[in-house]
Image (tube, rainbow, N blue to C red; front, side, top):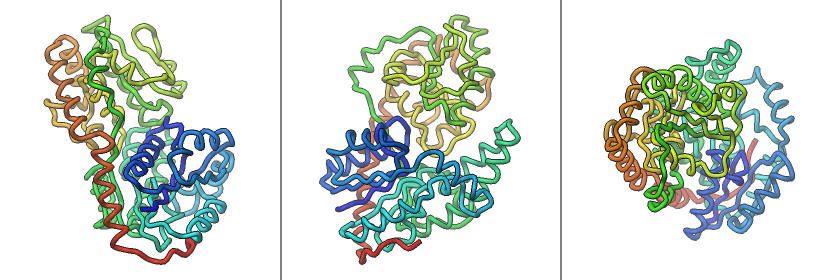
Length: 407
């Protein structure tokens, strides 16, 4: 198939979860013999160059549309009172509309894959077989942010955006042939507004380090780790809650315990939590798996989340026992007690981690089972093969002429 891949952010460098997903999907599709053309926003010429260097030999064509950050802020500010979600308005661009129109006028695309709700407006009215990688219900995610946010202005912002997204995501789903979501809870959240009969549960996978690397890992005693992009509100909330409410309980039992907050762009509030050697805030690291292969226990203490949590799968892939909240596990459905330990309160989470730090056999059993669970269910190929089959079905069911997109 000849596929047009539409992305809001450049998928290379693959430093963000959505970028990594698009990058791995493009490489998978090309390896499977498909012709992939990519169109994406970039913020600068440097980003454009990096994208071309990273995926230029993979994709048959790459078109990068400039959208400087100052314009995205202006887009959002000028349309706060509008009906469209702010995250959609953030990526509003006449140039992108024209670019996609031009690509389609040249014709020949069997299917369009649109990644995330942000780009749906560019494709929703195009009469070409098309799918939307929605990934998560933003209404579900934002609703949880409203509940847990302590900042009144932030809470108001999330409440406004949640109201906009709630109707929009249900409406826009109907304009695509298939919509991919990470889990049943995301579909259930959207269907509180309207049925989504074209929804498919099909999350993405993760890179899995070699068995040899995991087997040879040297674990530092009593080291606890959380990973992720530490500028996102969900990760900041999780790491802060753990550092302030859970870790002191662990220290009371095991004074030599340490907590590592590993990830790029940590907010100032997270950096303020650092008190080496007990609490480390690393910032960006060259290889997150190096840190995961040094720790004894991983945590995913998410209170605000929807869809699949990459940090959880990455830790399990490294043979780590993971203690997580129920919300963090929603997207991967690990079996409690077999693949993962679930605790939603600070005291319960601390007690479970103390038990694991004191019991090497329990850590080994849980970590081994977690690794096998990932190998069986959470590689990139496992999910992309299913996605590819759906793409074939959509393209074969609806072959139509390809005029430019209506606005």
